[in-house]
Image 1: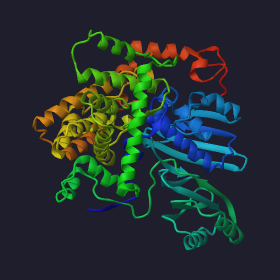
Image 2: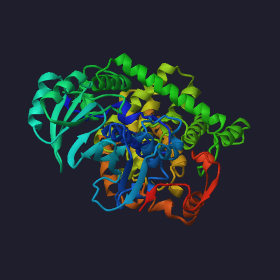
Image 3: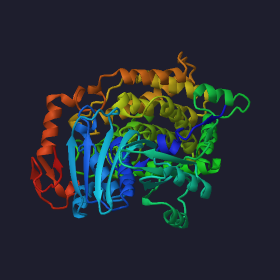
Image 4: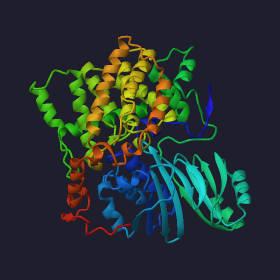
Length: 549
């Protein structure tokens, strides 16, 4: 069955990725991408930015502590999500002479992760509203008062004019092969949006400006690694459709993932494999860096994985075998994340430890090849596609079941694949793992993506191991995977907003959590958090020029 849409998930856009720094993909990586698109909208010339968050959303309480500010500033400066300067982005944006204002004001945001930007620069003013949809994915939903839908996964050219928009659209369509050429009208004038696999030539814009009264042209470069295209097709988008597709092929889950992503990305199946191989190597590097020890002041948990390793080596832990190795690897990755090292969001930064920790620990214990690890990760990616298409990875929308729960379901299928299990066993393991994590809340202690995130990543990895073994032993999950994913979506929407990553419920509001949060707010060592001034500032951070109101 073929499906045509520009918005089908990609394994490397939506599921296993982005490669990034920071505590949260939906806050850090997404805000970097939003900031880069905003910078392009302003032609790189920005003097001041007003950033508005709705008080009923999650960002009103989490934008600073979970890295939204850091990422947005980096994006406005043109950096990417792996840039080592990101922890210092607040100082860098001041040094660049860009004035930032934050406003918490009700404007009826429909999504909890909504950024409303008003920007002024040397060439004028633009507004942009964008949402972080989970796992680093974004959608621009408004530009200059016009409702739009741009995901940052193609080359987008905006041609602003007061009139003759129809004629401009027809001229562009006749001179350039684009995926879409659309007209948008806002409160003042409008623009023609050209979506394509590349930008039109400068000659085309020169001829356009000679014929029509153009106000300005803005080129918004893609921020996603896998681009969309016109008439995009995928072979299946549910587990049931995948099984139908596979009826005459008898392919394992990892091969089906290659078929899907090759169609989705318009790349060869070998290229899909190579991309995942590079992802696996980054994950391995993250584990090595974590086990070597991490040092970062602005976090609530220090380096604990090295102590766990010492106890393992001294045989002073209960005998957990592969399970203890998983705990170790999960901890190492989570510590790299919390120290602003490079990790892979899989499917999110908050759940970045579960999938690689489980699979790479199992791979080491089983002494498998790198090729086997890549196949396991591809199998995990296919499960993630079904979740991304029919539920969410955003804890702000679905609680921690959307993050660690999804990671557990993906890891369970990967472990079965690593063990040489069948397609049916991999799907059964995923169903069991997701069933076990339904309703898991998101309530970060001290408003940081560290705890109970660490223990829940460990829970996700060890649950995946248990469910993989249950499936390999023939346990019956009873509920098909598609139905479990649909249930995830319903359960997430039924959760109170207080326990969906808003720091308004659960462990977030315990006295100890609030005391830790206050301690971090009252005293921050600037040499560690990126300021560079070496001072310890109190309460209102007197050196900060950012206005909040």
